[in-house]
Length: 449
Image (cartoon, rainbow, N blue to C red; front, side):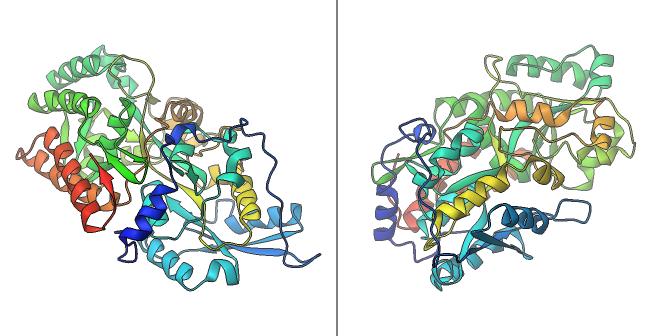
């Protein structure tokens, strides 16, 4: 969602100034998370605290329904009653609905305190005045989540909730096809280019350029190289999209595009992508962690020999960035922040429940079981275990700008021009840098380059 006009310059300065100059990965409680939980509250002695949780999880019949999970929580916590409410609209329609509820005072008056918020919308929702700072309440729980996921729920020294699911970039490949070509999954970008050339000689591609996924794909790759595009410093947001670590990624990918070593498509979700998988033309993909669970359905078979592993990096050491995911945030005005965070922690560590919803979970307390049909397509690999391993290596210092939706849209636009041969990868990043500045100016938000 674009920033509401109510995010005035004054609000922005106040909001951002509370973040301080603390890096997003270093905001755990000073005592290592051992601080006692803030006291729980109640309306009156003996009365329950009733809170509503707005979510947009799939909640299909074969899954453990959110209402079932909530019922169990309520039974275990007699002083708190959570009411689960599924949002029926599109994901981007959630945020105007949240803002409207906050403006109406519903968090304070009706206990509408919890909502699913995408990582890319955390900053915009906070600056719009929709989210609470619950740093004190979350401190004791942060150890139960991957640092990269926890970092995206933070804005400097402000924490707005707890992470639920993640989308670490991973590499998915057809092992049988790789074996036939005599190549192995590349660990470095140079090895990746060499393997791509060998595959191209056989009429195949080991990865792709997906125009409509440009924003999260490229930001995630930049994050994997240690870049931090946006960071609150003092009372301003520092913008550094086009730094050296990002330019290194641009150079590697452009080199492959120049040699036609990547399968180019305007849309990851168009039929031609699935057809390329089915035809054996596309035998690998840098994908979001939530894709392996369904992407091979395009093959039309019950068994296959694909695998999931880490993405290539400059030095071959494991590292990755984010492509999607969300957390449970606490809404502004909530009178019962401790109870709200207690539920967020409880639900976000219910491994079986969230696994049944098809999520790559953000908690590190356990790993969901890999479904049998997924194992069959991945040669018996414990895919969920591998995804959990990759989630450990996510960049913990990559929050998104309050105007990220505007920036991401521009990135995809230029990504489409790359497919047409009318732009370079470097143009995506330079455009993102300029759009970040322009959009922050338009929203009257303070920034520094």
